[in-house]
Length: 464
Image (cartoon, rainbow, N blue to C red; front, side, top):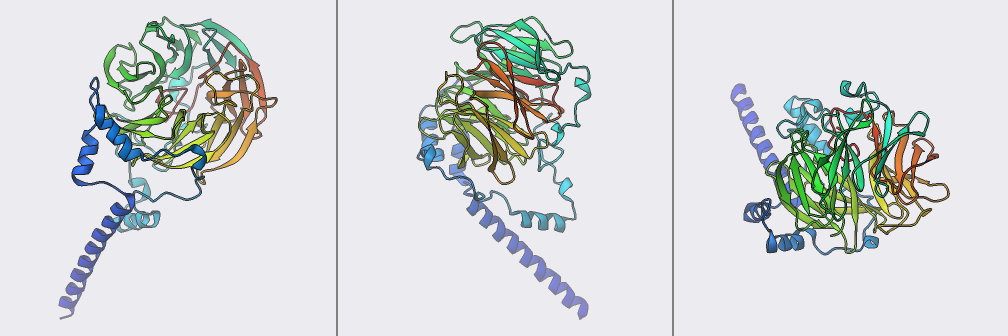
């Protein structure tokens, strides 16, 4: 009799838990606003494949997913957490405990060929100061500065803060991009308004340039998470060109007709999608990196000019700098929705995580114009990832135009180009103190090398 009673209790308890799980899953889906059924299928199948026009379908998606664009000033500061698209932390911990696994067992399922995510709570965990790859052990410690108008690259020794070299490259060098395998630095010369774009390789062990390769409109460049393709961001052509990462031979392209001024990007934590900024259309485009197609567009604000974009350490949130809004939009990556705005400074531009992954350095270029004046009210804002609040602001002494760059390998200096002042800033990340180094005309996307990390996703060093 006792055995039968125990069996009945176990059966009833199991049935209750099952019903509870179904109820919880239903509630979570409702709270997150997830679409299902035919509507969801229509949204996913709407975008056109590379080379095909997406026409009215894209306009429909803009209206349905982006909603009415709000002016930047009307966006609230992000003080509240968004409605989660997954179970709350307490529920997740309970689920882990019930399954008999640990948090470290909850591995991120990445795209094929992508190196594993070591810490799901911090995708920057392998870019800390003590994690230089053996591949870069012979690399010279240098800062490479592309100067858009003087068509050259200045080379700075970060130990002495002095220029130690200079060499000519192609027309209008925009960014110096570390390759996925960390063996080459590529100078993206987009030769504005012409068909003479090129990529100049630099050997990081010698600091010397090689022979340039002709490439259409390389404003910027990224790499697929598996390292099999370089992605040349052809800004003027509204196109992403996937190329062999060594020879730069074209593999295929993805047309992005609704993304004027496509330029900067970052990836989801699992590598399944990337979000690119559309500078001249005031929005974003989401790219399916498995099916190689446009997933949709998102308008941020009328008159906006989004620039750099970076993922939060847990990969759930994307921060988007907007030079017209003077701040950073907060985007939920999964739902591809704007969930907040954080005011920073005039002409918000570049975004760079600290070496420990706890802070985000935000450059404010001091102007809302593409071609601003020298000595503007430029500054650096320091955002705390955990609270999503600005915890410090470092003005450039005497005014300036901090644009793009990266963090030193040891995390002690933020190296940033002074776009309208023809200088480079070396900013102490403890005090905000600034050293100023004169360089060529209109310095842009400089890189610091070497940087910690297993591989590079491109730009000036989006390391993982």
